[in-house]
Length: 602
Image 1 (tube, rainbow, N blue to C red):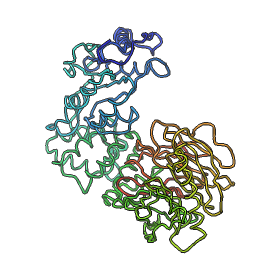
Image 2 (cartoon, rainbow, N blue to C red; image 1 turned 135 degrees about the horizontal axis):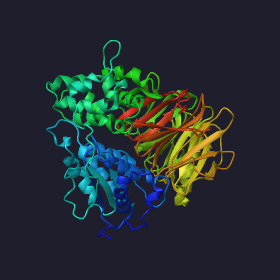
Image 3 (tube, rainbow, N blue to C red; image 1 turned 30 degrees about the vertical axis):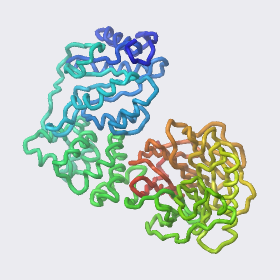
């Protein structure tokens, strides 16, 4: 076994059980398969050969053979043509389950990953994008900045296609699979003029990028950077919203990283925000338009208006953004589902109208019952709410950074103050007597009768009515680990559905008059950062935000799910019955309209 290698040797799979392979490739295929199965051998395999020799096809054959077969797992396959260090890192991070990460953060995560990892890297010799005088245009930069550090990790192995280049040739002892000469398929670079001539035109003579051949969309920006008079060619592409939606996201990312290239408006800032997701969702032009439009809303109004018609064709599109409004806690106000209650990082509470985007301060400080005020864990002069459960626009339960529940009452309403104070007192006393009862999550919900859903460190979920007095909550231990988020919703047929997330990445459903479902409705190797639910025109819908940046939308009764790839990690969510999803993240507050009529069609 190679020194430092953590993998173990496994039996070589039978090549006859793999997909068919041309007779002249069988020996190379067997050699590649032997290397992949031998966890104790060289950690690098170089797949060499001239253009057209079948290198990429051989890697694809290996990958296809592992599908549905235990014993040999390929953890990521990253085709490298046109990728830079940054875009390669994003794609590898996504495939390994970390989300799009910078190269430095990716190296840290892979270094901490306990799995023996096996990677395939086709077309390394074609990596690089952007202006030719920058390091990012060459594959050697990707090798030096990312692949070499990755290959230095003892638990990572990789099969890398290098063509006839000398890339990674300094790795002594690397296995080599050489396919020799191939057919010349005209792999020379086409000129910008030739590529532009292949783009169909609309009736008024504009380029129709939606119908342009994929190789043209992929290569035309790099060709424009090499062309005579390239400034005009590049400017024409960067000012065309159709090309921004359909062109190579990797090439655009590398080009816009060059500050020397002039760009219209705040395109560079907009693209930088959307690029990690744009490079992942390249196959769906409607989703790309929605992502780019979402990044432009609140940042570049002119670009946002150009992109709005394209974004509106998708099943979600951004409605508005308040980028200068940092929000730490967010909830819809029961009975007033177009209004939000929100708290910023300083603890200031406000209400917002989600249509007009107007705001109003809640000026009163939280009023505490005598029992709650006596608790040593309560600090009413320094409340920093991290979640809210509103009773109405004037009162709510708060969960602050010290894990204390606090009642907020902004009017002289002794009855409400007593009821909310009673809930805070109940959980405060339980936490003092048992550490597992410490509150770790708070959510609200319902369109008719407001509830507070309290989750604790022991995995138990407690449901309180905020309208009717309860001496004790309805409680059930739903998780084996601490609850990280909770929410509930009433349905038109009288059900009260409670959703909760655990620290183990599970999302559970509990109808409070019955037992919890025996298995999670979703389980991922990521932490849930927020939940929101609403009873919509198509039935109850749950929104789940995850630590890798994804937002999952779940149609509760059918079990259908969709992924909304948001631009940043979500800190809080709210969902209206009309399908308006309000998101708070590191940049502020945003609203996304879901097209409920088509959301579950695919």
